[in-house]
Image (cartoon, rainbow, N blue to C red; front, top):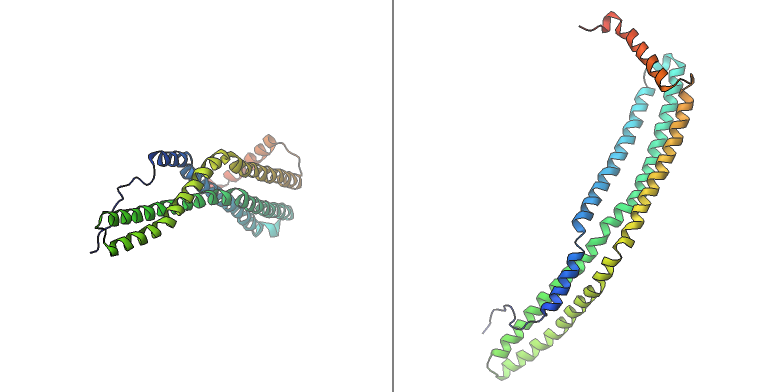
Length: 246
């Protein structure tokens, strides 16, 4: 007569072992923060790329402006700007690729393997409980020949499953504390790589825009003088009747 397999009566995993496992696992609950960091890093690099692509588009639009056909100085300035924006975009792409390889990908890969190991341990525990309950049911039945045979078969089936769970449980109890202790060693190189990528990028940006300034700032005016000059020219435009305020 078939019977329903329930939870075993025997405590197959001691409360101490379960408590130790839960304690070590709780220490590693950095996953939510790491997922958020991974998501924010992705958004940051996507925004960086969008910015440099937009800058290239703007410089291309300016270069195609009819004024470039009429004024050689304006054409030279826009050509210099377009070249600078393309260089900026290229360095930005290199920076993003470096961040992807050294920061984003490592952040994405650290927890799935741990979670998979925990899931395998949980599945092994459920199999262990199921077969232990099966053994207990046969032990409670009348000791007839067929029942004894089935009991022996159930015990034979239980033995490797029990060993598998104990091996998985021991491995996690051994390795989770090591992972916790080495978490800084794992993450620190990624953040150092992020800083280095940013330093290289902004150093190149300084060089690019310094060269651009030298190319277009022929008059050698200070920022204050250039602002006054721009304001004077805008005032001239505002004085025209076609742009006068209503």
